[in-house]
Image: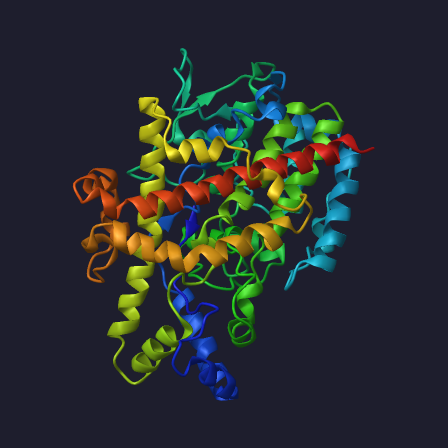
Length: 477
C-alpha cells in the first residue's frame, strides 16, 4: 500500500507573474521551497494504493492477450525450489543488476557488498531464502506464499481460502476486497491467474520499513539511507518511495528538493523482470509469471498520475503562496491544500476499485473494462526497455495530472473532494462512492469516466508491452 504524498508543485507556472517568479528565485527562495517540499511530504495520511487491487484490472488487461491467456497451465512451486535450482545463475543476475542500477538510477543507494547473493550449496532453504530477500533489499517478512487472487468475474470452484495474514504482511483494512485461495506445490494453475495475482503482491509489505530510520533491524543494513519523504514511524509511509516516481517535475523542484529523486520503482522493475526472464529460461515457468507480475506492479503504479506527480492540479504559485502564509503564521491554507490532495487521491482509487469490482461481479462490459482489454494502442508506444517505466509511463501520467484533478472535482460530491474539513481516509470504509455519484447529474460523471477509461487503457497497454519485453528477454540465450 503506497502513501499519499502532499507536496508542492506542477511544471506549469502561473499565467501572471509565474515565469518571473521562477527566474528571480535566489538561494534563499530555493531553500524555502525545499523546506516546503520536505514539510509537506513528511506529513502522514491514510494508507492508499497506486491502483486499488491491481489484480482486478490485470485480469481484464491480459484475458485477450494470446501470450498470457493462451499460455499452458503452470506447475506451482515454492520460491525455495527456484532459488536452490538456480542459485548460481541468480548470483550472476543480481550482481549484473546491481552494476546496472549504480550506473543508471538517479540518486541510487548502492547495495552494501555484504548483502550480495552468493551460491552456497550447503545451506538450508530458509537461509537461502533469507539471503535472497536481503540481496533484493525487500522486507524479510515478505510472505511469497503459494496463493491466487481469483478473478471476481469468474465463478470460483470450491477452494481453500487463506487468511489475509498468510499472504499479506500488512494489517487487513476494513474496506478490503481481497480474497486469497491456497494452491499446493505441484498443482497446475492458470498462467493468467498467477500473473494477475502477482501484480498486486508488492502492496503486501514487500517494500515496508526498508529505510535506515525504519524500526526493522534489517533496514539498518540495507543501505538505502534515511527515508527521503514520509514518516518512518508509519509503516505504510515507508513504501511510497518504491512505488512513486517524480521523474518529470519542473527543474526548480528537482533543484530545490533533490531528495524527491530518491524513488526506486525502476529498481524493482529491473530486478523482478530479470528474475522473470531467468525463471522462464530455466523451466521455472510458475516463477516466470509470478516475477513478471511483481515487476508489472511498479509499472502500473506509475500509470496513476498521483504516483507520477507531486501534486496534480496545483501550481507552483499556489503552493508557494500557501507556504508563505504558513511561514507567516497562517497555516490554514496549506493544511487545506494537503487535505484536498489526499482526499482526491483516495477518492480516485476508491472509485476505480468499486467501478471495476461492480462491473466484474455483474458481468457488465463497461468502458473501463473494454479499455483495459483493448490492444489498439499497444503499438503506439516505443518498444519496452529498462527505462520505459520512467520515460514513457511516468511522463504520460504526469502530463495527465491537472486534467484528472479537474475531472475529479467536477464529478465527485463536493464534500468528499472539495471540503478541507472532511478526511476521506478516516471515513473511507463507510463511503459507497459509486452510489453517491449515481445520485448526481450523470453529465457530471461523464468526463471522469472517460478519463478513468483512458488511464486504464494505458494501464493495459503498458502492462502488455512489459510482458512482451520480458518474454523477449527470456527468449534470448
